Length: 429
Image 1: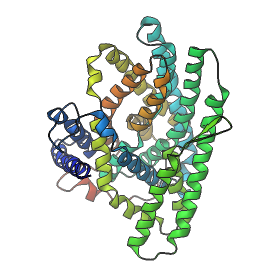
Image 2: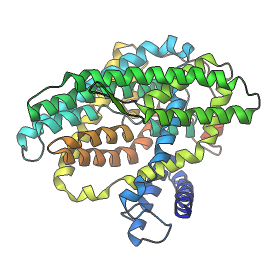
Image 3: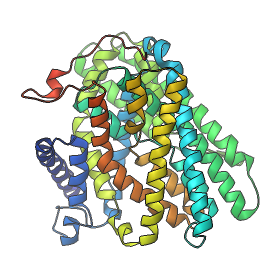
Image 4: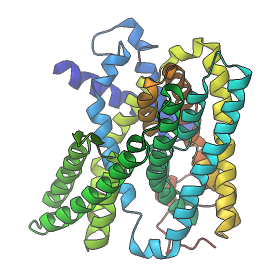
């Protein structure tokens, strides 16, 4: 127990210290936390095996997985706060259109590129893995995006649409992955399972939305019995931890696997709660303040999990570079085209795609599922490589895009955190 506490405190302190250096280099704090994690990981300080300093193995980092799950729950709960009825009326249609189209376009572009690579290098990448990677490419990481928005108090139409699209992306990515992975398995075994391709992901999405909505109603009901701010904050934290635990449950009914999406459950809880509770804004603000250290630990541990050993395999690097180039092309062009259909402003059209590049936890979870393929190790390593690249450069690109769009004020003598103030209701036009 003492090792766990000391290791977590060292990780937290390392992330904070690295953020001071990042500020001097004009980099987002998220990047600093990830670099701190790399420094403490098994490919740096972890090699020395000093007691309580660093993580000696990737398996050791995995023992802190509960921290990451809880942090993701709070991040998704906070993003759910963006789906207020007033915002949905003005931006809901655009968010759904962009959320679906950019994901589908990205999958198609990456599929074409990697299938072509398969015919050029059939011994390196199977066609089933190529199709699976195309679906994984659709996934976008909400955590890094939200942290950049929070740090610089970004506010405006691009920021609002971005947070909504990131939330919708999880459900779309889940459906695309289930469909593509089902086809990939069918190509390998010669049989297509409608249950695993359509029924199971549909059940997961529907149940996640229902459980999340019930969680929001329950939280609103219980918090009415408490009047002190600290107790109401405590019950909100307890509710999020409860839905994180519930979302981890898995069982089987009549041969159908039933599970839940953590991000969907938590986002739906936040969405329902913020729309039926009159004091949700205040409670959300307090919860955000409470989760600051938890979010730092999430990114430091995420950095420590990045496997630098994959950089020694040239084939992984080749496939990984192709994947990154065409995924980036898909996200940027897909966002631009879908925004064009919705007649959004030029600022949104030009910058939204770049802010959707970060990729992490959701993609890694999909890659873990894809390990059952004949060359599932290649899928996992390519995704690990892309996560390494996207998580280190993605937050900076997101910051620059929001800055170029005028939704982050340049930092001068005063911090952007103090300079930026909440704006009035926004329009996409």
